[in-house]
Image (tube, rainbow, N blue to C red):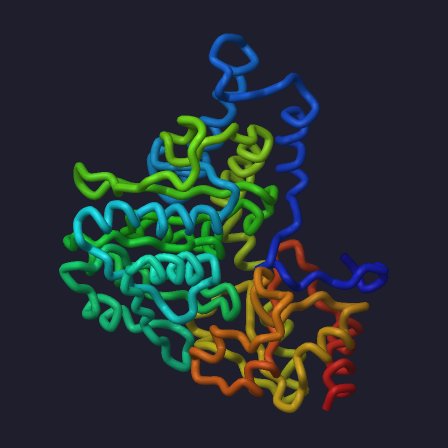
Length: 384
């Protein structure tokens, strides 16, 4: 997109990414071709669809060094998080382990399932974060008890882009009976070290890596000879190893697989392009007072959370909406005007949180022109 386009420049990639044309082409035949149900075993159409789904499963698994049979397709990371957390409830009740650890900055797709279990008698403990926006791994592990069923920590925060110490946590939990879940919606296909991290459950999403919306996966690994004791949240079929009944959307699975394969090959080039956009933003914004929320040394290349003192973020977004599309929090809570729970947990006041916006971009984002940056500065000055 260029400065001459009539549409605003899109800087909300953490909410969703545009669909890669190559991914669309891979899905096209499955949308327009013969009927395809991977569960139909009696004819060639069903076998062909099953082969396509299994190929996609392998491509998703390859990104995180997992086995294809460990990948359970879902409708997205939200469903994966629910399956990972609520799906453990029956096991926790049966073995008397009803303590769950997570962090104060998790996405609502983790916090709300935890609240649900809290109402069912589970003890939910949220570990605080510092001003840098990340938890201390030792603080997480030292809170584990004999009755701790699960530790759930996101890999990178969706609002600040700050990477959490999941590698260190995973290593310390390796010999522990506690299961470890990572919400990797923002890092799958972007952070290559994810393949080397110890975990038991991992939630990922297609539409964060230029794939189609409506599909994601939960990776369910083994700990030695033991597989996580999950129970399905739905009933009505044996698909996805009995954990996610229902017809697998073949076209979406193919698209997710293609997006995963591309991301694995291109992640370094994409990161470099995103870094160039980041440097451009930081250079131009030096012309006006601002504060970066979160430790920039731990932040992903494609996102930044910025506070403009004295500027109401809602008013700023309205002032910029004809030229630049940005957000001030998670897309899942965009209808709410509550201050960001993430920023509040980092020690910001409500007023400071309400002065903050998130900019997120990708390798396809053009170098931001002086004209567009002028729009940002103009919008800010209107509010000052």
